[in-house]
Amino acid sequence: MQYGDEREHTLREVAALGNIKATLHLAHSGVNVNSQNAMNGWTALHWAAHRGHEHVVTALLRSGADPLIKTQKGQTALDLAANHEATIAVLRAAVGGKIDVSVGPEPALPIMPTYMQNPDLEKTWLLPEEFSENKVENILRKQKAAESVKDSDQVSPSTATTTAPAVEEREVLVYLSNRQDENLLGSVYLQNQSIETAIEDIKKELDGLPDTFTISRHNGKVSIPVNPKQMSKRLLDIFRNEDDVLVVIASN
Image 1: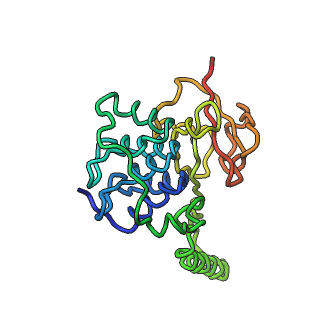
Image 2: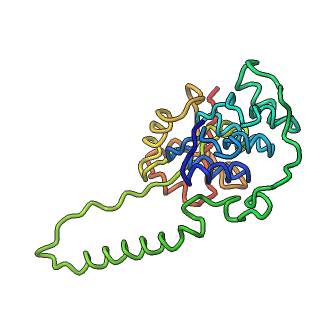
Image 3: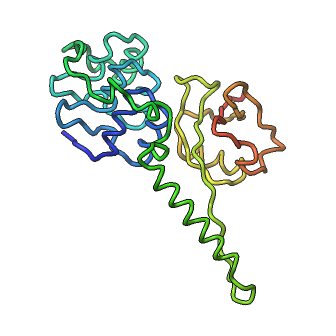
């Protein structure tokens, strides 16, 4: 069994709570998605399946989660998803009929983990670096960066040297056809480059893209097509808000 560090525990926790944003962030940051709890052998996929979070199950499978791993009781994710039809369908498609429900679902837990009884509400929707335990560190880092900029501004013109500006980067969620959890292709970290260049990076990183497609920006309420004339604009000129995601639409 593969036991892990604190970030792997956090991955299991956010998967159990249905936080797809944090799940993808941790999975794409190199956290072992197949790490198992030392006590019960549960992985993030086991938890997501048990709780019926089919969108998180889909994201974990696309990030390399193994649906054949068993818990200490011999249960696969499919066993634990027995009461959630949509999740079962996702897992059956992933295993291709290799396994069936054998052990059965988990009964009501006699001892519920603290983070399930009294969940940290921040962890149901925030990214890991936004959790309270990291806020002080982030504030100090920003203050230090601001002081560095201030100090550099005070350098006299005669001694000043050209310094490369900090590279802006953001995580962009990519959906196929429309903004539905089951259509989430994944997330990509993109610099503030031209949208045309960003699309090339997306093609390199994500599977499941159509051969030819157009893109739209969905702001959480409505999908707004990105016009071909806007392709030379920088990414953050168009995708400005935290709720903005990129939707890929197959061309006819």
